[in-house]
Length: 404
Image (cartoon, rainbow, N blue to C red; front, side, top):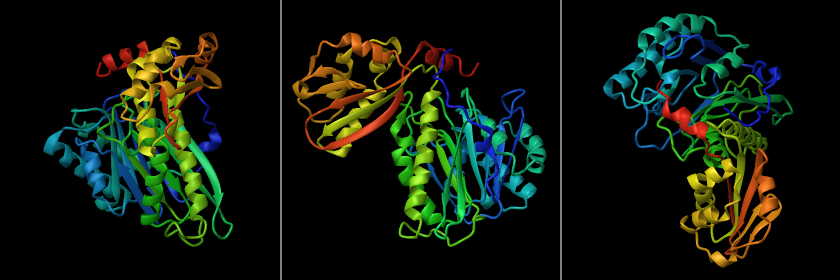
């Protein structure tokens, strides 16, 4: 199956982040012969925050983690979502937290949980508990790469990013993150699973505000298939090992720069998810300009980005602009169809709602792995962008046999 060319993740990305240890293990909970269990621990933890799916069918680990106010570690398993597993799922979540806490010298209330995989499958607790001692014993500052691999399911590549900054007093700090996600991607908070670490001292309140805003500009602006998962979770932990004054609020010295770095890192992780979309061969940035309001701009961009007809046209490299106009027309955004202009990169594809006679040039653009589709509505000054991919035969094949 063809996937978009990845931006390689170099070994330097996985260098230790001061104050953190990580580990991975092959538990055999669902997969065989590959890591499927990961653990992150902050030593110590100055602050932690998380944002979660707004799907009304949240998984048990989401319910557990929402109730954690002083997280210091994250335990994650891949292959079994522990979603729609009833009372047993909640009991299993508590048992996981208690077991991990006991092995790591922490409290259960310091253990954040995340799971990804098949909905409805209860956790293979026997395999998990058997693997846990070795997992905890393997915690190491050099364990980030193993952790980033252990969280994957249908992903074909590891997704990780690293950025550096300077604190209020000039001391260097690191922001590191990894994510998993390839299908069931239309986040309504974050992405399938993502984990961010920083050694800059930050308060939980500041981290939560920065994380929410960063997610809004990144993970909440991507879509593979229009499906919001039951398990979407995005965590950030601060070890404070870089030293210096803590960022307490948006007004703290250095807060603005940290937020820029964090948002940029989240946007890069989001891009990696779309590049690795299930069966994807194209990555397309859909931008709507000239909308009457920001809400209408986003609604219009999302309607185009999530339209199966538009996405299959991307896959077929077919400049069928009528599908784009139809998606815009049903988006709820106000428009005059005979004032709409469409561009593929710089090619003026449609002018005033009518074909502009440049189909051959448009088709050439659509043969690229990555390009932009821009719609000008002529109704105001608002604009919004959504990152999407094509819909291919590969997507159907993957999801038609996902449990096999």
